[in-house]
Image (tube, rainbow, N blue to C red; front, side, top):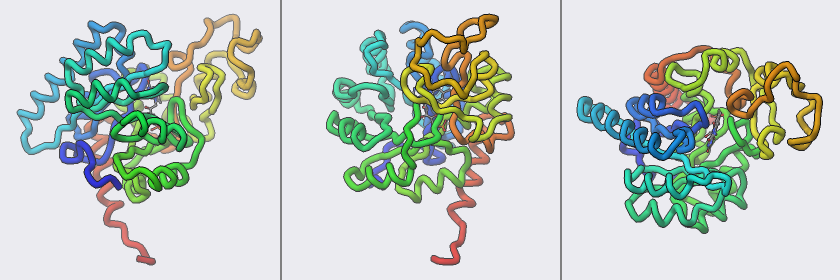
Length: 322
Ligand SMILES: Cc1cc2nc3c(=O)[nH]c(=O)nc-3n(C[C@H](O)[C@H](O)[C@H](O)COP(=O)(O)O)c2cc1C
């Protein structure tokens, strides 16, 4: 475990609310921070740099006011996700704006985070990078990132395929800095398990989609509640990179989940001509294996209070072998 865990003294739980395309808007981020969870969002959820500027101001203003009004509570800082892939033409602009707002945590994904580290470290922020393998972890550390997010098997979004036991243990052989563990975490006992395994934070995405504040339709939330791990389809079909999707949304779009191994763009009759071509994330909904134990749509505040109870109960669990 990292000797000094960034942000730990500002968190109610060792938990980061993962950034999610479409789902993570300021309402969700602010609710997470107020509840003591480090809330994050992808910068591209804001449709322009002007809107992003407004969002950053909104998150800062609302969390600062809540912090001032509730001095006894731990109100978490927030983070922004930057997609570094060349197709993101806004990445430099978004980074410059993040620097002007001094965003406490920048989460980088899909690309080399070297230039980001220089900018963020200059104002005292931290950079955590998303990885799915030891190779990517080593490359990110060479770029100077402060922490790693291990996106393991069963995670929502572009997930890895390695067991968290394997990837976390291998990474801990050469890195004792901050590590967040992602992949199907849905309750406080799992959060405690992630810590016991050697992680500093849990990283939860899908669980937060099934909340009042998430920016997705009621229909999407209901499909999540109706699904189990066996309803998650892991395929590169929609974006070229393997990701996990809800089978129910694939079927609804007129596609056959059994026939998604064709390279993207292959002329195919898979698409139902009655329906418009389905788009990943918007029509084809992503979620991780943790959906099977989601049974309600609480507010973030209620959810985090429950996670905290479960976490504390897990901390006290006796062992017949200790
Ligand atoms: C709907 C959805 C959208 C996502 N969008 C992004 C994104 O824009 N950027 C990113 O770095 N990760 C994204 N992710 C991945 C999450 O940040 C996180 O790694 C993942 O949700 C953790 O696994 P879990 O969903 O099982 O908790 C997304 C995940 C989901 C479910």
